[in-house]
Amino acid sequence: MTAQLNATRQQWLAARLDLLEEEKELTRRSDALALKRQQLPRVKIDKDYRFDTEGGSVSLNDLFGGRSQLLVYHFMFGPDYSAGCPSCSSIADGFNGVFVHLENHDVAFWAVSRAPLAKLEAFKQRMGWSFPWASSFGSEFNGDFSVWFSAEEQRGGGIEYNYRREPPAPEPLAGKTVQEWQSPGNEGPVAEIAAMTGTDVATYTRDRPGVSAFELVDGAVYHSYSSYARGLDGLWGMYQWLDRAPKGRNETGIWWRHHDRYGKE
Image (cartoon, rainbow, N blue to C red; front, side, top):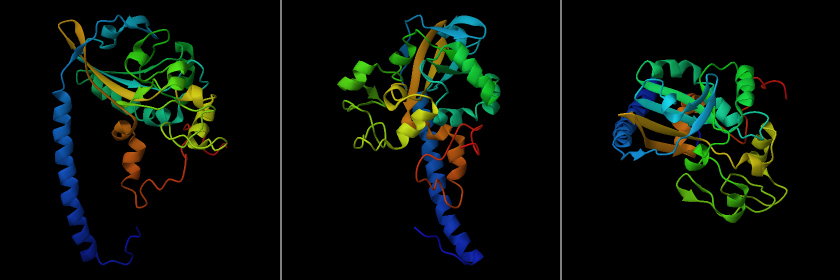
């Protein structure tokens, strides 16, 4: 749709006020959904998950750091990656300015990935990040929260991500999106992103992004919420700005990079 050019200020204001009513309704709906998230039933966590951190091996309880709430960003960085997922990295570029405020409002924040801690620390230094990042290497944490799947699950149609079952992935894996694979030889954007992590499509897409929330009650940890895929859009600050730009997202493919790669390719 082409926007009208050379409008009068009065025409612009009338259209803006119409849009404002819809924006207000979206805000009210978003507030109502947030309340429903808080009211979801809790599931007690009985497994003793372990994580490697700068401070040593810790439990899920330890990640709370004395707070009653915990938010975990499931960052796509598998053991075979040479760099973190560029999409997750773009989202994570906004974490530094946020986590300190969360931590001072009774909410602990951690990114968690399957790659060994040394890989995470090296990439964190490269990116200039300071937010806490834990390795779940060797843990069942990622699998249990539906952000990692085995090659067997991938080939056999055993992947259930974003609350839906995916069909078996063809060989070789090639596609426009994770769910809709295209013809062989046309690997599309997924292959481009996979290459940025030093992996192929199959390896790259066995890890997935997500966010999970937990609550600590009387020393026990409870899972309250998880969201995946487009459910993370609200956390991707770049897109919140683009949605307010004159041309919006204006995308024809994968245009974003690790922030230190712009202008170098």
